[in-house]
Length: 495
Image (tube, rainbow, N blue to C red; front, side):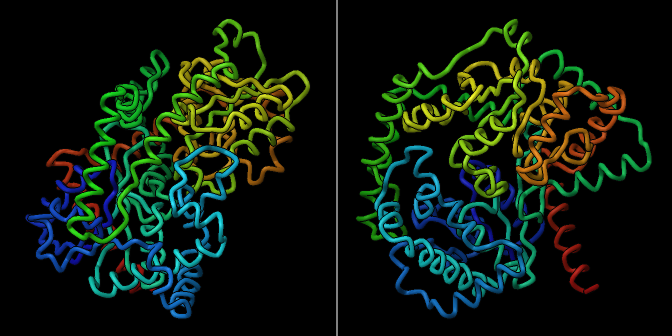
């Protein structure tokens, strides 16, 4: 089987081991799209140098793309995938899509972002270059499967859209948000675990008993709630960063840029000075902006009637790609504030990774919204969840944690915890006032035994549709991936 792999930085080691095993045991012929200076990582994985496609500097290639040809390709891809191409621009909020996040946060204003802000046709031309490149790669590699860790990076999105247009299966391997160190595989463009959804429906239809493992997970979480492992590790690594380790990283960036220039590599390495400037600006702003945040005591929260809105970090695929209608989190908070009954407060908890990255005017405007309290991003999130009358989230994991703790949850987009049907989904922002009034007015709460049974079915479905991340898990992942390809081919034959 010919496989085209698009790397995903945070899980790079996992995918390298998986690809090695797939080549050795399943005979995969692997091609890779990667940064020019990352070629060495794929020694022993790709058959030859011809199977490595170096990412170009798309911003330098904007005038080389055949705009008429790429426009026809893009139009076909939009219809086949159901995704408008400007989703790539929004997903690129750090650079070509910088205008989308301009009022919301600081980000190193690299030359690319400056060009995009100075000329709003520039992002469209970059997208044309991305599609032209990925189409050329796919034609050359002629893959039976496109494999990646996410569909949200811009050229990854282009590849997934082209795959939908060409009838090629595209699979994303994602970390489970229920289990630590387990992976699921999905063809869903929003990267939700559709296999778990199907297994949940089967469990519910047969009334299958919930496993002891699932019941224990629910009980353990209620006694001592904890963030899922891969997110906790991500936070821990950030907390462990020191002044010295960060400056060592700056030196590594500089060395990489020098080596890139000396070796005349393709692509655009990360600039150093904007990253250094961001580091010091973040530290300065984090100190200045402390005055906007509070840490209410649990007893105070227990006495207060409030709606809880946890923010995502920005930019992030969970909002920019999976819930683009809610990427402006200030506007989401304003809409909820405007929908509150007179005796209710909205507690907005900032994400810890946004600390020091927003302009002060952003917090000043947020704190001025009627009946809004800003919670310290480093305070314990579970005390806010435990005492909330209602949790509102677009698709965040706080909604899942709220369901486990027996809270009312309103979601604004598709989530991995939709199948139990315990929470309520607002089909539009206009539904919020009615849904909040209904939820805050009391009503009949879900039967606890029924809710626990449905939560347990989803936990069991998630476990059965995920694999471990050791050698045995890799073997099971390869089997699952092959099954996805077979299902895609059968569906195509049936059509």
